[in-house]
Length: 353
Image (cartoon, rainbow, N blue to C red):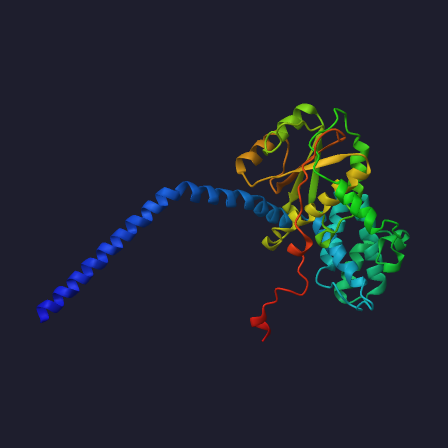
């Protein structure tokens, strides 16, 4: 019996070793079979997050980072927007804010809009907040860079009542017709685009919401035929038609200090894109949004043509021009509202017992 018992153990051990060997061979064969896919996916992920890594590092070491300044100013003005603002708030970042402002002014890298907005919000903040030791320290630095003669507060650059917003004479039907008119146009007149119209559309786009008002994106506009043609040939899908001008929309990770914000520049830029292309229609221009897939080789081709910083990445391309009234437009039926909008539905009942 004992011999039989040991024999059975031996056979079981052999069986397990054989199974382990076969599974190892199977795993190795799977890796060999899918190595290209695995390596490609790794390459895509690594390439996609490289600008994020560079941007976070840049953000932490840049003492005059305007995105950080804009974020902090916006946080302060939100605190000032409370029905009854707290007597003391922003103590943990007010000195940082003032120091960024000082460095930006010293380096002459502060745009007029951000400077005036920041100055007015900080003036209101220091006027209304109780000066605790940390706030008083920040105020001392602030007074050294902003002369007392400049401390008047402009009402239109600080928090204001909702009733004071400009009135709108655009009704639902008017806006609905604009949305219907805005289609992806692929056939344009051979006519140079008026850059002033592009700037006017950008003025409207920049009024779009942005996380903490950082607006960390850029629009690169090109209308030289050889550059437009070269850029348009890269993403794919631009076949059979010619673009008079093209815009490369970039996200800028240098405006963010943590990996948690990986989606923020994409969201912020996308909000501006919709406003931008609607504004183009009101100015006699039309556009086509060109999908940009995450293919490293294609982004490298674009980087060889135009300058893209190490913390920047491509979000989208936009073709634009004056529409050819006899060019055809795909109908592109949209989903019904009930397929997208769910009102008080899809609650997780198991967690509500």
